[in-house]
Image 1: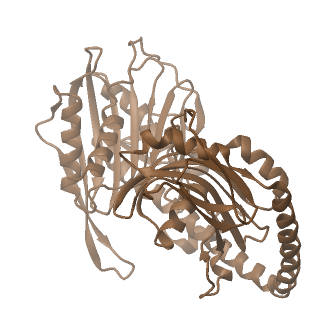
Image 2: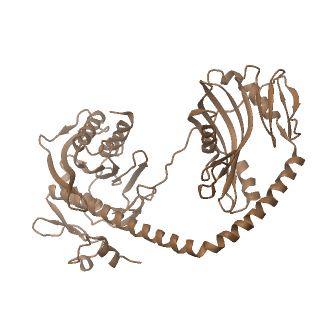
Image 3: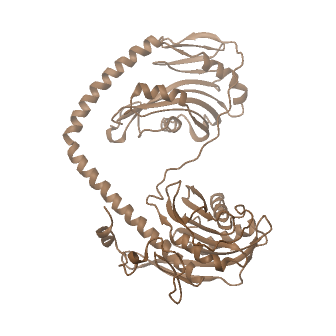
Length: 507
């Protein structure tokens, strides 16, 4: 199996077994719990839980999965759920085997019950045609946690439809039966948030290594255009690209100091054949740098080393640009392939766009060297970069000219857009409303699917959900609190179609 599925299944096992989340045991409480609402920090779900119980959650992309476990303050009982894209695709048997293998790896003394329960469901499309088979497994067993206590668990694994659902209840050995009603009620109160599989990708990257400038003998130089001056070692070559941009390289043309930039046009305004202009929506400087280099055929195979936002430069740029123009400033480093060699680069770059998001520009100061020579060349390249000084008078005149052309073009563009704005607003509003209706229904159907599988988990413990007001025994005796109110929810009509859902949903 590839590295990614193993990493995902390791996450499944950590949330499934919960080996590191238990504290010392305490006496049980017989009083009915006071329920409180919990909203996911990742905006993926909400649930009702007993007051004081601790919720730990996780979310990741590629594949997209979210998970949480709810534990009582004394660490005696736990309810866990994980849902997302299956790392094994539609192979439910492979999914169960991998989850069990990870459980055994984390708890070598894991003892599963001799027999497991399994249920098969046919998957059908909108035409009623069978498209596959979904399998639901119930596994039971015991293990010893790091505090040398025996734990008993019952877990559900659902797969075969491209999604993973893993729900689990556990308690001290011999106490699972009495804890099951409360733990199952927690899982019954789970509600999935819409847009769960469209969350943006998150995470922080490593900080850049500090640059330690060392004295280097530099020869003063000035660009022929008069835009900037800098220092470089004797014998180094300079290519003046105009407007302060340049390429400074050693005699062997292996070490580089670059001051460069690229112009970008938004796809809706792009005209093919315009030289020196790339087509893209607004990007971060690190993303735009790699994109421009690949599109212009200068380098390939970019791999990020770190990205760090420069708030000290970002704040004055935002103050100058105003609230409508997008800006971003970053320090970033890459490894890439250039001239058949693996290079390492370090850059400070920024992006700024216009208020209409029609065009934007990337600028960057970059030092580059072959990967195995970068550390040795860093003092020299850093000294060159530190000596670069822009001609502020020329830059000021160019900015004034660009701003005048920008506002003239903006007026023309505004007049054109105004003639079509009413139609655009109507169409966009209709698309937005339809998207919201689809997301609402998908969210509702996802919750119904999870609750359907949850009923099987509750049934294996001798209980039935009955309705959202609580759990019942097989004989119909109610055994849990009524967080939703029985008088409201009994005998209601089941919502099982999108037309019915839209007809009664709140607006």
